[in-house]
Image 1 (cartoon, helix red, strand yellow):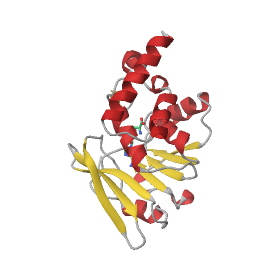
Image 2 (tube, helix red, strand yellow):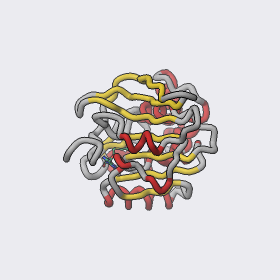
Image 3 (cartoon, rainbow, N blue to C red):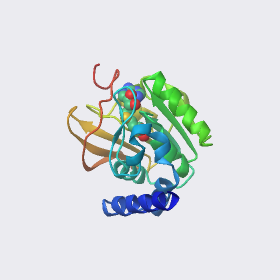
Image 4 (tube, rainbow, N blue to C red):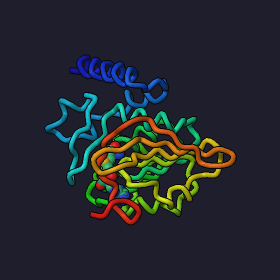
Length: 216
Ligand code: SAH
């Protein structure tokens, strides 16, 4: 069983490495965080496959390749304070916790937030703070952030997030932007003079619902 699990993890790393996740620390974090602890009992056998899986409240835990690409895009060195919008299962937050100093993660469903909190505590992850609310408004109490990651699809970059991003060059926001059906995975990076933007390619996320997102 354990040998099998090790092989599944190895296969997943090979696949996401081919897909563009080259940062060794990010690959290590994905190998370290037990994704099986974040998926439902009936999906256990698929926990280490490179696919999105259903969680509660009609939401999904993202595909590991996308988690890897988004995490890699933040270019973490270990000292950062990160804001995540869309806690979901808590998996992406746990991966970030391996690579950054502190993570604030916002979820609009209190049931998902509570389950994620409990899971993270059980795994001994103490540097993630899960809060309940509308993440399109960010979390001003914790601003400025060195990186912001949005794991739900937005119609545009919420202004509050840009305001809560550190002014330091290199600070980044990673966010899927587009229609409810398909989006571009956008990166907005602070430079000395402005916000430089580029895309990592097409993605498909569940909608970001809130004041500066989609209406319910
Ligand atoms: N990062 C998660 C996957 C997120 S799925 C993981 O690793 O499992 C997207 C999540 O965003 C869902 O849980 C959804 O409820 C949440 N969400 C959608 N709009 C939101 C908003 N305005 N504020 C906070 N969370 C939101």
